[in-house]
Length: 156
Image 1: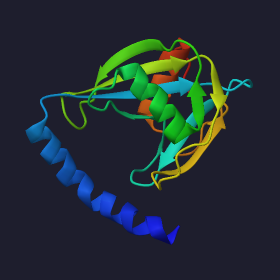
Image 2: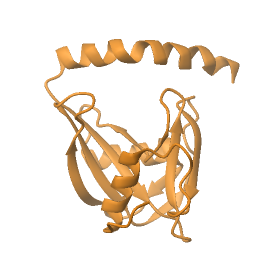
Image 3: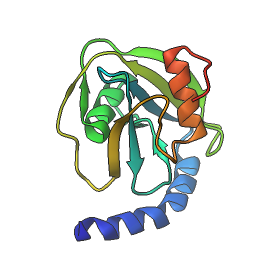
């Protein structure tokens, strides 16, 4: 774990600089987030080492990668779940808090199998949580996206 601490500290310092560099060099960015439920109806959430809160697994679409390929990769790397079969695109969002050119696609992962997550120091914790007992720190945006994917207006 000591090995990852310097990387985590460096990431926290480099994030604002990276966002500025990305804003200058890239006209638009595209990210993905996925909602996956287990057999008990609990939702998969991850807690990153470099930002506060619990979030849906996801990340950026790499050059030469489709959004669906990125979603499958991120679910395996961050969540330890490998999507099986088709993914369902739920919605497209502009990620205004960071950059109006940053867009995020929300997918529903209807079927998956467990796999080994990538242990690179990015994810501090991952787990499945009951919809009525999301962890402290689950962001309001995460809660809204879960409701969207499940087709409900009930407050989480």
